[in-house]
Length: 297
Image (tube, rainbow, N blue to C red; front, side, top):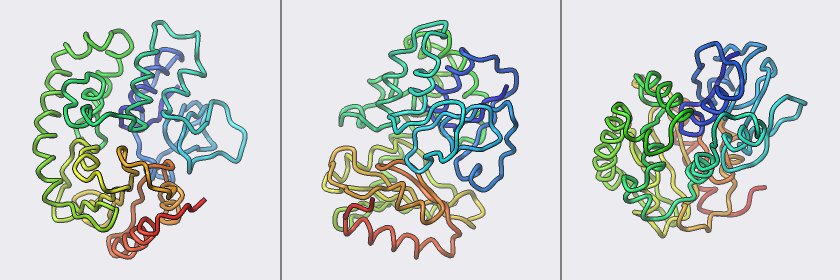
């Protein structure tokens, strides 16, 4: 069997649980949602897909995104929920070798952005929050670390995980990256009405860091929009949108709004990837919808 999942913290935890509950004998296939949607990932009949859109070839599927609601019977579990890992945990309850309840609780909070202002501003004081920031699908050399972290989470508590030399190194990098990222976000973000807009297109490779910081910098905003190129070729643009985690007044279903551009996600967060030539018109439509701030479901 093979796991096909997304390279984020929720995907990492999904994989740790699946390794514990099933006989996984093939390397993980890491993928982004748009890769599955475009048919760029070959799915086999023994694959377990987690935290990604459904594919009819798979053996099992676990997901929690609003725009991935199934219309056909499948083996696994789908429900709107804080994390996909929580659904894997529920499905296999009683089959695990150790107690993952605290890991799932923290993964639910992190993936649902249910964080305090202090956790956002000083993640280094909160072990699970900091650990989650060491995982990014935009790290070209990340696969070795992701696999290492999966095995650590299967056998160790959070204190022991953070004592691992490789994890300590990655955490130190995350802290330094967040410090630099904060200044970049401030320099490349503008406020239009009740929406903050962070445009990283001036960068060849967009900076990466604490994705929650923008909400602490612009508490008057009800939503944030982030724009970046999808890779160094500058041929495609990623537009990410999120409800503010501190100002709960956005009424737009983000995943549903972005589905019209080939993207998707949750009610409160999502993204789409469009040709660079279409990015400004897509962005204008998104900003118009967010500016009206009317329910769209």
